[in-house]
Image 1 (cartoon, rainbow, N blue to C red):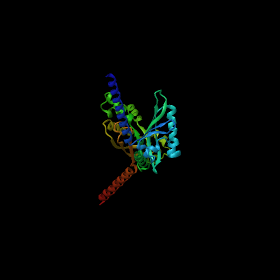
Image 2: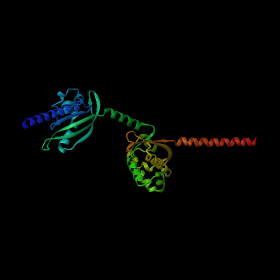
Image 3: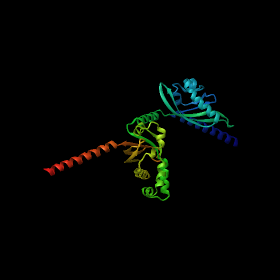
Image 4: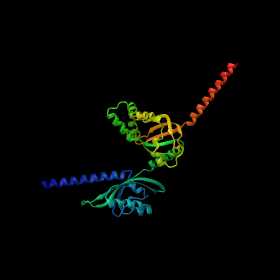
Length: 312
């Protein structure tokens, strides 16, 4: 009786394992990402339909072949990544671009080692996600950013967020009053801003040619009166606002004081971390100068008219 129970139990376990295997295979084959495994020679042990489709062939024609046999010399860089994984036993992640079916595709790939019962590496399992659409949008954004006629800055305010949260935890309820009473605290918060990138219009506005040293000193290009701009900006962010705009002074690399309009926008998806903030800077110095000149002419004209009236 006990023997029959063990037999049924074993049979049930085998059925469960078979069902789990079928379920796993169904998930792998139905995935839109390319999922595959390779041996130590770089030959495909298994691959799903999404992966095989990028080679314009069937799963059967991929199994047993290497990337070089499938896509030629372009696969050499992939093989180097695989060898790095086999040598170190560490997971690797990287971005690649390849031509499939006559079109350029971008992939984000993650590979992990497969080990036997003794802990020896016997192959790898990889997942490659097609990020071509996201890359296209990124490149489109980058082109617009770099070539826009308006000065744009990409900045990281994540440390600013942490700084402001620390102030709140310490009992500060009026951020603006705190910064006005503690200039050093304001300076420290300003230093938390990380400038990630600037566009061509920014360099032109400043008469700069080398981006790296300019970015390093960008936050120092503000007039002393601009402290209020930073205070208002930090208060807005502390209140959870994702947009901020104001007007102020900016000293370019030539030493000229410019009147500018600042527009700050937290990029979608970064509202919590504030790790990507886009700042646009519009030079309105000429507009202000023209307005002042027109105002002067107006007053002169009024004076002449009034003088003529008195004479009459």
